[in-house]
Length: 84
Image (cartoon, rainbow, N blue to C red; front, top):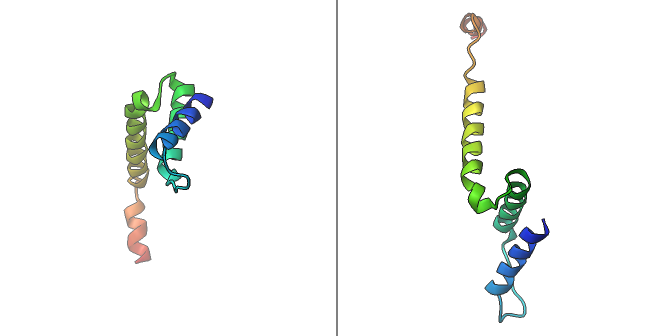
């Protein structure tokens, strides 16, 4: 966790080196930080190396969500006809 956070802070410092006051959009960086920490703990690699795994997990989640919406229940179509 510490190593990933140091990398993020170093990136912020380099980005705003000569500016005393600045604003940073932290949403993307915090998403990347949490993904990097999870990747290091779970897979022993950085987020860059594990990015493909995260993309596959997101794709798997999407496909699972589609599959649960299209579950076939025998006789359910007759039930819908009676309601409408």
